[in-house]
Length: 556
Ligand code: NOJ
Figure 1 (cartoon, rainbow, N blue to C red):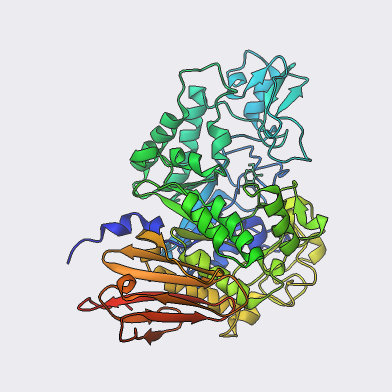
Figure 2: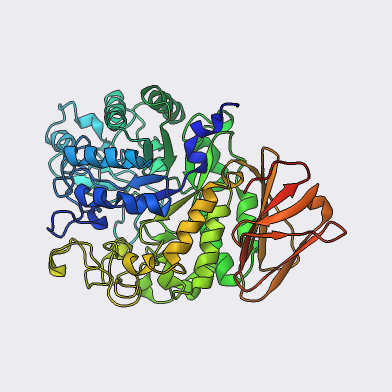
């Protein structure tokens, strides 16, 4: 028996699940989610079939940016529990075979972090140079702010320091100066600390801003790409299996450098923002073309790196890589009201309400995201079709408490709803209509479907590991691609429109084909006598097909 080296790169065939401890499950009845509550629900996650939990920030914070404003990198926010509770959670997750990655937010701290407090208090403090200061306000590009409408500049004047400091995000999130060696040591310490607690890696926040050194010009010799490589090798020395998944919403031409260029020795994975945005345009147009174009535009990524595919994350559903008119098409289809839109380039809606709870389209989209080349990432609650709460400020609309039961508070906490850390969804796709308890009892529920799909995806490593190619089809609404891995071929076909459409695969495309296994339908399809196969999909239909080759050991 040969050793399966592929298991080492576990994230190539993983299913990630993003959640916020604060809104997942309240274990002590104070209205705020916590590690004890999450630990009680680890079996839910294990049964769902996901393989890796991504925890959003859980560190002490004034919580002005939902935890992305950190005051202590080495502790747990007391509202969420203690370090001991974190360890109990980690032990339980590991016992159930689940890995955990955590948010690494080191582009900036909170302005209440002791480092910043010391930095602004004295120019002689060693912490002064932990941040980026200018006596005069520098010129800046018009599109430099991350949250248009909320901030107008990336430089903020500090009266105490009598200087301007850099902040790519909110003004209360001063950027760290990674050109300073001490800051780099701090970052390594943070990573080392959490790796030692057993995490399997990091989701790295705001990578382009972190590595942007134009404004940190005091250290012209500092090379951010080399730094990324150094940190990667540090991480590998501390924990061989660890990986990091970067948030870098940049143009396709710039993506490869974050993965380490030809060597592939920087980030292991990147979120696939370009493809995510194209999927919504394809769906709005009922045409495969935008998605095919986006996939063609992707750079060829280095060996042993990976795309992270997602339909929705915890932020605005950004459409910033589409043109203005394309974005308008998506807005018109999925978020026509101004209150559904954010920062002029995104939607603050959840998946299910955007698609009006239409199970046909929802299931097709899940099938698509699980079959695209790469590794799928789910946002908590999307597996049941949870809704949004548009009465909440900006991105909080999609960060409401998890819906476990049909009660008004969705079973998130035993405290009165008025004391919840955040109000639940009210009405459409709220707990009464959409919850885990009801869906668990129904074998045809969305939850049951997603769970089956996850299991099938895990048994179809061709999608995560293989090389891929688009498959031509005459029907404009059909999107088809094939993945090849270790001599095995899987072809996925998705209908992005409401009408029936047919794809014909010819004998050459199928190779030495004995039969074709329909992986989601559990059927065996037989090619015709000329070796070709006709596949007809109903509106928004989907198929995953594995070619069974003559003489090949069958995979099921
Ligand atoms: C990206 C995170 O996803 C977002 O939620 C946060 O506000 C910014 N980075 C700043 O940390």
